[in-house]
Image 1: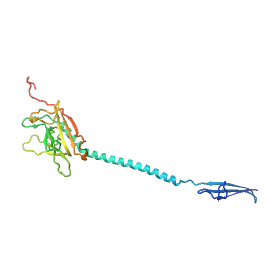
Image 2: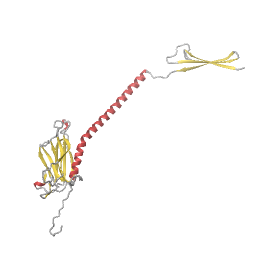
Image 3: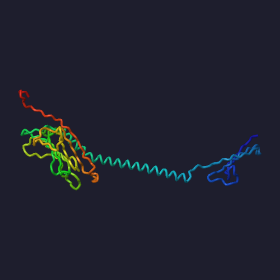
Image 4: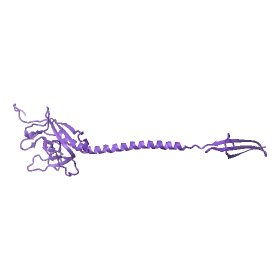
Length: 280
């Protein structure tokens, strides 16, 4: 005789401990009846109860999660925009300093290649550094610098050598309405043996310059002028350059310090004049 086992799974209204009562919200009580039949008679009947309770967040938990997420998102947003503002400010400052750095690099290269003043009636190469009227500084004057240097570019199409005369000075800007200060220009003269008047080439270096100053070191003290046509001999031992740009914020104008650059002049003069013994 074979035994046959049948099962019936149906929901119940109450849990095992509270039969006949309503089940709590979200809880379902399922009853599994297992019957064992032998022939046509039921020999054994048992019931297995299974409770299924879904897992979910409550409204308070959801509100707390949204609040915490909002606070974290605001903090990330503040940090991101602060970093973006810092990047833009840094890039703007670098863009503003780029022409100044290039101008100082050109001036430094010219000073390092300065040659000793020569005045033999044919080849004139003087060193002049001093203040001229018309600047925007506190004293109403700006310094100019004129000397000969060996930074000329040799070109097969031009007959000039590497020695050229350069001068640095402040001039009125072409567009006065768009510029708050003066323009720093570099004047270049390639022909040092002219038979007629030669027009020099001007190179724009920097704009919005408030003041420009050249100081000359004699080995003892600093002088604001040096002119070999007025009795000074040779080159100064060093040149100190001070550049002051126009302040974007007038309130910080008194707190700014001028940008300084110190360039030593190590050029030595040689002569082929005979000595007392007749040797050269």
